[in-house]
Image (cartoon, rainbow, N blue to C red):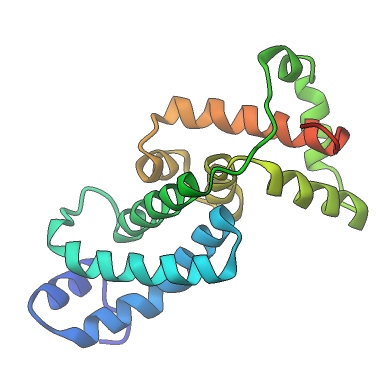
Amino acid sequence: MEHPSETDLVKRILDGEPQAFSVLLRRYQRPVHSLIRQIVYSREDAEELTQDVSVKAFTKLCSFRGGSSLSTWLYRIAYNAAISSTRKQKPLYPEFDEKMLGNIPDEAVDELLNKEHDEALMQRMEAALERLHPADRALISLYYSEERSISEVSAITALSPENVKVKLFRIRKKIVFLINNPGHE
């Protein structure tokens, strides 16, 4: 069996077949690490958290009920671990008020974020992303980079689908604001 299903992998692991967990790690370790790296930015911290998530997934696998895909379950563990680790760091992030974001027309957001990106714009966008709160970076990463659906992002983050949509909308405005105002604190 070359590509066992998630259900088969879980069953084999729970039945005491350690090789099946190796298959699970090979399949999901890179995307889990990628998500964590988007949130914590430190390569060393991301590697350590990825290992922690792997251990936690192994020890808690018996609690996986199949209500979502295994990858969504793993992403939720990774998301929670990464967000928890950022709470300990307490770095400062720019403050945004409703009026500031409300002054950015929706068309301006779509125009800037959907146009052909030149190198300078890409650098400004990356700088803006680095200044976002880790939870905001995680939402952007899950939806745009990892191409997860709104319902999957909702399941991973424990936010309602409507809240995910609203937050993504606001985060896009924050990115545009930071691109246009790089010195904002």
